[in-house]
Length: 157
Image (cartoon, rainbow, N blue to C red; front, side, top):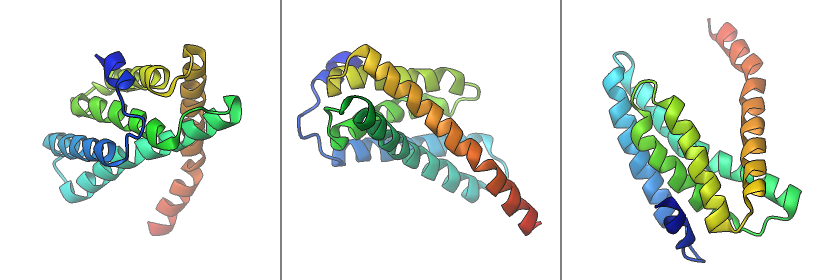
C-alpha cells in the first residue's frame, strides 16, 4: 500500500535506503533491458543505468525547487528524494518491458504524488502543482539540449 508506505517513512529517512533501493532497481532494469539490445551492449547498459539513477535525483531537485518557490516547501530534500527514489525504483521494475513506459511513467508520477501527500505533508493540489511543473521543466530542459546534441553529432561526423 503506497499510502501506508509513504506515511510510515521515518522522519530522518536518510539516503542509504532510498539510494540502495534505486541502485538495485536500476541494476535490474538495466539487465532486463539488455534482453532487447543486440549491439553496443556495454554502451547501452551504461546509458540506461546512469539515466535510471540520475533522473530521480534531477526530478527531486526540480521538485524541491518548485516546492520551495511556490509554497515554501515543508519537506526536507532528504525526505523528498526518498519519495522520488522509491517511486522511480518501483516503476523501473516493470518499465523494461516494451511499451510498458506508457503505464509505468504515469504510475511513477502517481506514486510520487501519493508520496508528496502522505510522506511530505503537501495537499493534493500542491502535489499536482509540483508534479506538473516538474514534468514541464524537465521536458523543456531536455528539449533545450536538442540543438547541442545536434551540433555534437555534426562535429563528430
